[in-house]
Length: 458
Image 1 (tube, rainbow, N blue to C red):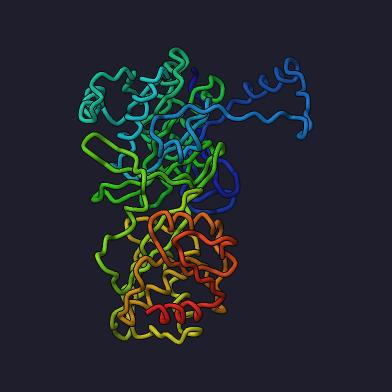
Image 2 (image 1 turned 90 degrees about the vertical axis):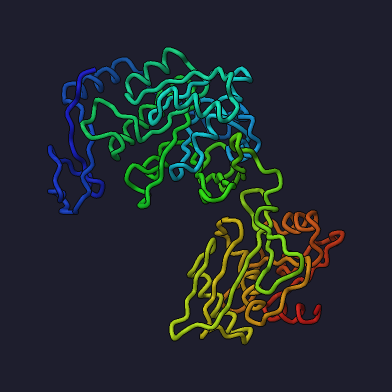
């Protein structure tokens, strides 16, 4: 393969330059030139000439007449991973798994390909960061002594593509995409140009041969240089590996999936034998208090199609002239807004108090259905009075003090009742049409109603 000419293209105006410059010569924007490959005029002319002569025009189809077939999936053997993928791996699909270094991406994928291989699915594990003996050592630690997965220690893109074409595995793991490089570019492995170019070649090969390719990508602090965000628009599925390295629990979240639902979440526990799925993830996010404590309120959040019970903890303490507002797992700006609503519509002031809010278990709650639980936990901490035992709450709080409904309220209530909760404060629009056994439901329209009902229960 002849080495083609390297050019530098501007990410803003699209202008090109023969050499790298700090400022684009066309739009004069700084640090926007990225390395790429330019085809010669002769090859471009030949390509279009060939297409015009040999390629017939494609016939068109009416959308309503196209038969929509279900996508065939291959389960990985990990129930939690299959949940995030939408049921399993899709033939010809490209999956990007991103996460911090050392979070457990390689461990999970090595376990997955071993189970696939044992099930008769031919797999290839391409490692660019470790040698073959290092991968074998990890496999033995995971109890995979007799694994038949084929391993290839290689970082050269052209050799990897040739091996995939020769071996034709059904599933191939590239660990990691940051280490792969192509001779067509002069930049170092891990640069944006190399990562993007290598991923594009692997994606085209996956579609052409029907090979499922899983790319492993590391997330940098900036999230841009050599990070998965460069590749998100090129792949079919994007999974993010989250969790604290000091904790044994890991979360795998789908933020893009062309073959399934987004925002699905899988929960894993790191053990001596690798990652194992957690069948009841709500138990992770609930602290075990023998008796109710002040500043704690349990809510039901929705992760994709799965309802999860999460404990919201708040600590309100005397602050200085500049009281602090800190939230972990929740939006800090939304916390400031909720405190203003609490003061204006419920008469509870925290202007001279430090307010700390935390979602237990390291989970990140992005939906506004946590608003009501946050306000109740803050009020409980400020007054020093615990909420009733077996109590849950969820609902979206507006600036006018109204409590708006949350999606899939019935599923949330059923999950709470299944785990033994007996009392719930929810928006009026989420009130169940038929009573739920063992669960007393109070449907409210404003936040003042919630505080009034809690005082009556005490």
